[in-house]
Image 1: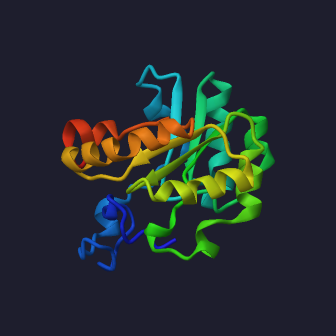
Image 2: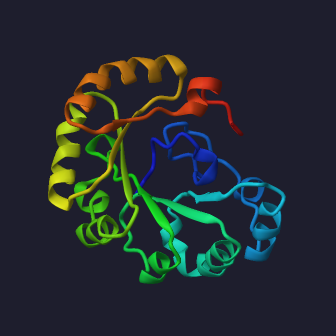
Image 3: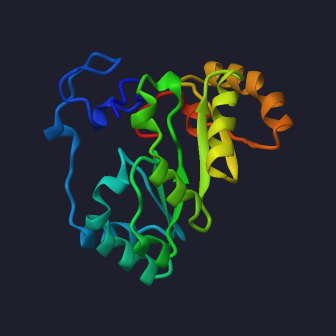
Length: 202
């Protein structure tokens, strides 16, 4: 996935090919940590749920296993956010890991063959507790969502408006609301954008 439109280009764009046109420094942005160090850092927070996001976490799921075993072994619930292009290891379901799957739509600019991987989507849809979230620009995107939902039996379905500013988010939320409710789906927002806009670190 190209992720040219990504709103956090500092996590991957080292050459300036993304929409921002800025080349970020991996030395400044990446901070490798051993899984034990991650676990120690998390111990300072009284949180029952740990959400692992990306990039694409499933691209390194084997390397995540020690951390996931440790987290679930200490009573944490774990969710992994994924774009649905990589089939998860069965061991993740055995650990009780849940998945938040956000398949990219046509407006992302990636071809369907890269965005929609049938085997991966079917495996994720069959796992307990999986939720599907689609980022939409307009009500016209909902027909594409409906095709994916019908084909893979993906439930529950959450629709999130695309937006980098509170104003853009509010306009798209209002435009999508009635159509999402009419389909019996869930509507959500991007709370950090609604409160802080596109400010980094929030």
